[in-house]
Length: 156
Length: 113
Figure 1 (spheres, each protein chain N blue to C red):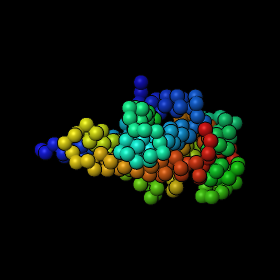
Figure 2 (figure 1 turned 45 degrees about the vertical axis):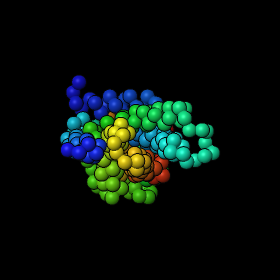
Figure 3 (figure 1 turned 135 degrees about the vertical axis):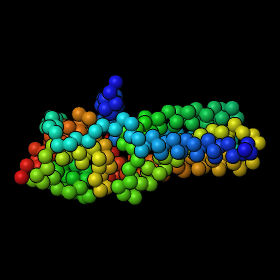
Figure 4 (figure 1 turned 30 degrees about the vertical axis):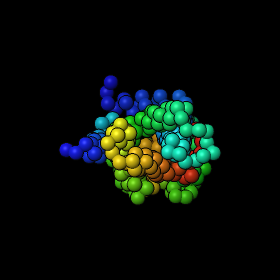
């Protein structure tokens, strides 16, 4: 497949559901952000916070794991389009901030996953990595999807 | 290397790889360079209303922060290039592919002085 056709194919795929490519990305990012909120909430419960939620245990851990996996899946099509088709852009502060955060997000994600698996690290390492990842995703959403919903259009 | 540094090193490698990939823009389409852009004006009007009118105003009469497009004299290739590459606060790739061509055809139709 010629490289130029990737953009056309991507557009054709996402516009079977959404009105435009950027609308698709905005909603996928919003879904990812919603799942990140679930991640932070369940993580807090696992650490004994938010006592109004159900008992910590296997169910909370399962929800935490699956919300993370789904959030990651939601970010993949967005990441693919932003990185391989749009590329590095810095025409203004918002886009520049988005580009920098987007460059870091999967690096922070990989670091967080490795921290989860490394039991030799101090206890604060995992919450710190999780909060960093959630904050990065939140700021990425604010500099893209939120901007789109406020300034362009709130719709599918 | 101490084991505790592994997450930071691995994350740093991914950050550098992402930056290199973003610089390469491996699947970026070539920007239109003045060649003919064939789009459907009617479809372009619908896409414009849903995607562009928020900034450029209904029918391209001008808004905030988008400038007036009616009577601007832009041709379809120029519009397609701006849509592809972005300009000012307008991000690149708001619409792409056939959608971009349709919008370009519509804007060219209202831009005729």
